[in-house]
Length: 82
Image 1 (cartoon, rainbow, N blue to C red):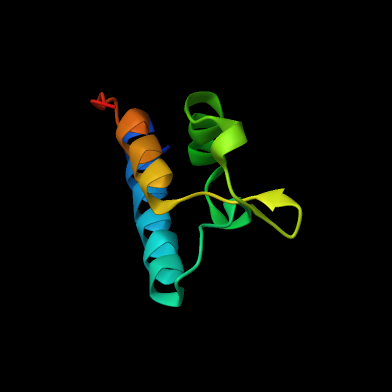
Image 2 (image 1 turned 30 degrees about the vertical axis):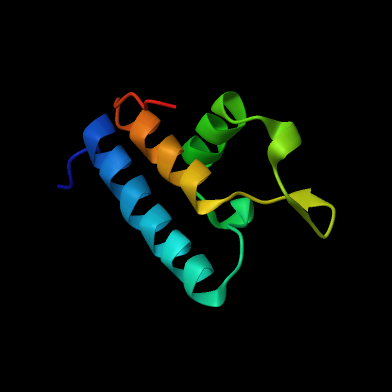
């Protein structure tokens, strides 16, 4: 029987998915579309990054790769020096 995922498992899965999405966006020279990100990452970005700074694409906010990476650090419990 499969075991229930721990919070550490969920953070690890979010990190793998998010890094793949960032890589795809960077290769295409585009911003990160929040539609593709895990919900927890989007929540962290919205809580910690100034929404007024977010670029808009098709009337929706998109994220810069550095904002997404900062959110990953926060999600993993690491503090950032910015």
